Length: 259
Image 1 (spheres, rainbow, N blue to C red):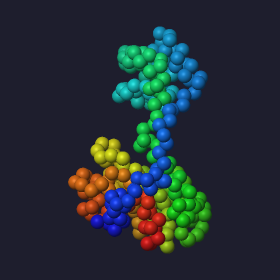
Image 2: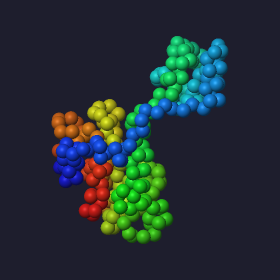
Image 3: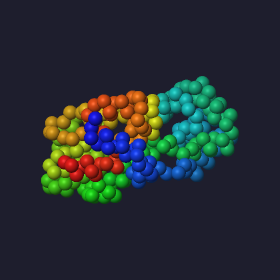
Image 4: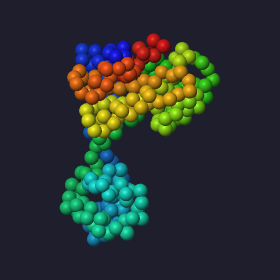
């Protein structure tokens, strides 16, 4: 088992791990989604009319479609299919009309799922200088050999890693740094539960660790959550049965200082 994985397990099981983790992932309270008033007026008007086509088109402009239906993503990608498939549109709009306007508004303004809030939180934490360095732009990063953390989007970090170290995975990065001449790349995730999408998130982080690079690079998984709960579950078994470099974000500064 990797030393920092072991330390992460100890941290999660012996200290106020979740209280400390809230500094990295300060999840917002369940605030409702906002809908532009003119868009809602359009939805309300078409709801009160007999035009399912207009209602459907208006609802597709929302971030959150009010009912779950496997055909909706197709219409998002090809809105021209709405007129060509009246039976499907009428079927979906029938479910929507059964809700009534009040319930429809409630459905359309539901809070974002927790896992969809996570994206920028880790980077916000890193950008605050908590690791001892404020991230710098690409020009500054490449103009010196000093310790530095690269500032940028997932795509920016991926492109920089591709150019500087030959990172070959077509997947953005959450962390790209250089410490004592050693490059470090990583993917940060909060694994909130076992199974399904959360297992996929875990496997995705492992693929980054296994990715090829042309230069010697430290590739790490900056993971937090249920994977550190002792037991026989898939994720815990995976991180404890090998030397895979997985660690809590709370230990990232300590790790970097060992390089």
